[in-house]
Length: 410
Length: 149
Ligand SMILES: Cc1cc2nc3c(=O)[nH]c(=O)nc-3n(C[C@H](O)[C@H](O)[C@H](O)COP(=O)(O)O)c2cc1C
Ligand code: SF4
Ligand code: FES
Image 1 (tube, chains in turn green, purple):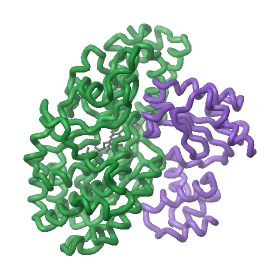
Image 2: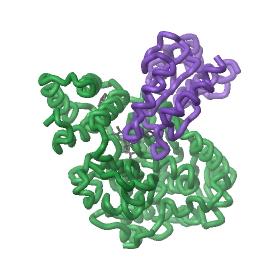
Image 3: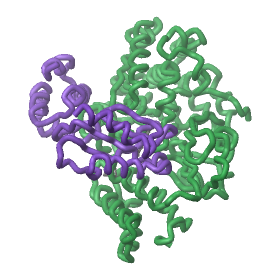
Image 4: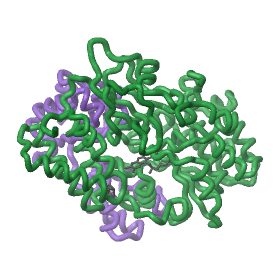
């Protein structure tokens, strides 16, 4: 396993992100030219061979996702890059857009070609102002260079790409909510089926992929799926950007091979723990992520939901022994209550009541009744909501109970 | 810029609705009833449908306009960097609690993660972002806004 293989971050700090010429000088868009001469099913076969899994958190195999939409007989299809990124502690997609916008756009064009979509969107988080500016400019220059528009690079493939900027809503990262938002509706998740791959944007077959997923594509097409599949370990392939924060010496975003343990990321990349402090646990995957006690930092994040450390967004927050756990519980509860779209009752009411109970816990007014309600609400949110936000809202709280991190909840 | 200028920039198609709403918010600091009706007319939609979309988002204000909007990040990362103390400091400075809107000039809000966690705690005042905010710095930052009122 090559420690320093860089795929996503290889150009960071080395190119002028405002000029397409800078990306082209290092070979950018050459692989697109080759891809446009391939049959689309061969492009998909290569991505399947790579073993790449979606980096939006779900870990769905990217090639297989493309295959479903490519197979649809419908002529009009859409391709969407998800840059809504608003999981607390996560900012890898923002950095990708800011540091190498063209590698992302090249990935989008390849994806749209593979599935046969002639219209693509980037749905960007409303707070990412620098990324908006750079992407607008990059898209404009791509049009001028015939990488977008009619007959891309002289092929028979036409593609329009537009930047769409959100207005502050975590739930719009969920793909069906994102689609509603793009259509000018409230950003509320849709019931499934029908699936996005069959009836997505404007009821047409649609692919939604995460920004990090798509930025991996040009490298895969250049070096081959087999080579990509050889990077990584412990059942996961490729590289991943981890956003490491908390009581580490060098907080930041680091690209590491899949299969790296929490310890690897914290000590090899983020400089280890701040002198004089001691970790209590790490939260992996953002506020929707599990808690891993310090003694288990040797564990490896992976995509299956059943893994001991589900990867989620790949954020790692190392929390100090001195942290007031009740304050952190309130931050989680406030977040999910604020971001619940309110469409279904168990989530709307459940996140509200959970927040109130945790407020009382912080004020020292936590009663035996509250404790019972707390456990009931956790069950309800875990099992009865329309979209995954309900489940997400109780993952960390369940771990607080499981590990006995909060005396009142023991 | 008038609302007409904004509307004329956009074709009438669904994916332009939120773009118009955002432009109006940026230009006028709110998207109130009057604007909602004008937008609805332009897109040939019911005002209720435009309101329902606009009011969904954190960055769109469908109520009155505030002169000073202070948003303190309440995300988990900023929380471990003591954002609760920043919130207390801001509340003390203005003599009002988070969420109170009685004075119509100032509003203090808890916000979800801004995606700049490693530079936290993050505070945003009238769309300007401040990084690594400490309780000691709060006064200085906020005075820069109140002095003009
Ligand atoms: C509440 C919620 C929030 C989500 N937020 C994001 C997000 O910000 N970015 C993202 O790429 N995927 C997010 N997802 C996952 C998307 O629904 C979708 O699975 C993903 O964009 C697919 O891309 P991938 O296959 O490349 O991972 C979210 C899902 C849920 C349930
Ligand atoms: S679970 Fe929550 S966020 Fe998801 S649809 Fe229901 S109310 Fe909305
Ligand atoms: S948690 Fe505050 S910016 Fe991310």
